[in-house]
Length: 293
Image (cartoon, rainbow, N blue to C red; front, top):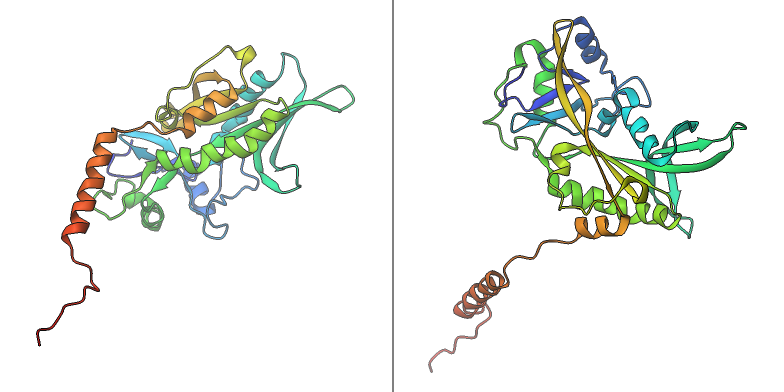
């Protein structure tokens, strides 16, 4: 198991200290084991992919690549159990464009699950959105350094380097999650279709408290996953595991996520006063100085 001074948890689907032939093959071929659209990793750059699936934060792995959630397609099974009844025939379609009333794109839905009858005709569907975590700092530099010599650099100490990579949960919710729910989720909600959101446990715990309801009345299912360390055939690896499922209505959840908690107004007035005092004490640059005759 790697130390916390090493920011990289998984590279091309394997622990950085995994020296098995399979791990070496995935690193040398820059492959993705998590059902990417092609066998190779395509994150950031197709020709020079950033093969970091997860990073360590406070000693625990945090998923930073949305494709990482596709392990064994567990997320589609969990979403289907929310969208459809038992025994329903369903399939999944990835990266489906969603248009608004003017024909303009509201974005792509990560995964659309479709229910179909015996003739193959669709009679219901639901949208599955995958929310990985943004990174603050620079993850490309430690990744490139590690890839130069994976064996020697598996236990590298990156803690003294500038821009040490960390999960940016605030940006992930405000710049990614909230807009996704507002635009795409708003259209789906108007159609009375359900949405499932797959996200990391550590990410969900940073969100404001959400008012929960029963599964049968819910518009959104929050599918919460974590990476659990297991040992198989003498080799450690992380596996995607669902730790919880939270059911909410659409509008209350959106309001909770997009509404900031107000601070103390007295503190803000104090800040304004300090700025005003500073402004009044500083003479303008264009002040005219009268010369004596």
